[in-house]
Structures are given as structure tokens and as C-alpha cells.
Length: 134
Picture 1 (tube, helix red, strand yellow):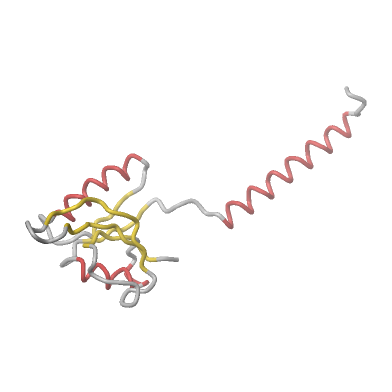
Picture 2 (tube, helix red, strand yellow; picture 1 turned 180 degrees about the vertical axis):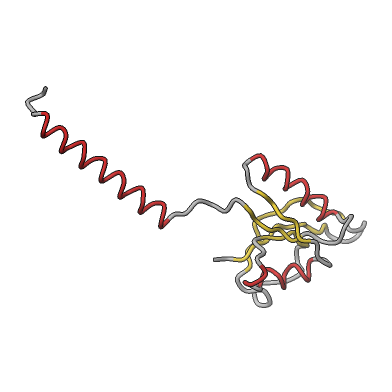
């Protein structure tokens, strides 16, 4: 078969299986799978943050990710929890403009969830998702 003996084909197959196994182990070790359970801070019961948190829980469940919702007193507490690495919190909903890079270093905005007009003469307040940078 193509000028190769069975012994040479077997050695080539064994080498290929070994290389694929080693590469697989390296990828698993250095690039682990995303977590199957994450925690998100919302706000007090009945708030819009809590409503959107429940919506995200359903969206995450479609991808087999368990989203734990952590009720808080609001965006100020959410920032403090995100800055604390021991809190176990991965991301949070919060109001835009509540902090900046000087007061909350290491926090990133992941984007706007929705706009909320706060009055007829005041600008719109954006609701954001924020997370701790790695």
C-alpha cells in the first residue's frame, strides 16, 4: 500500500495518536472551558436590574450555564463587590456614570443593556453590564 509496510503504517498511526493526545492535554490545561456557573449582581427585588437578571438567567440556561443572581442594594454596592476578588461575582448590572477609571480601576463595561430616559430635560441614563478585568 503506497510502498509502506504495515509496521511503518502502525508506527505512523501511533505517532499521530500520541501527538494528538499531547496537543489535546496542552489545550485543556492552558485553555480551560468557560465556567458552567457564574454570578451576577442585580439590585433589590422588583427593580429593573432584577428583571433583566432573570431574562439573562433564561438566556444563559439555553447554553447550559447556571446564572446565580445576587440581590444587592444597587449599583454602588455592585461596584464594591466587583472590585473585591473574594466576592465571587463575575459581572453586574449598573447605571452609567456611577464611577470612572480612577475610582474603579480594573472594571470594564461590556456594553449598554437599555436606555432609560430620566426626565424631560436630563440626558438618558444608560444601564450597563460591567465586569472585573483579568
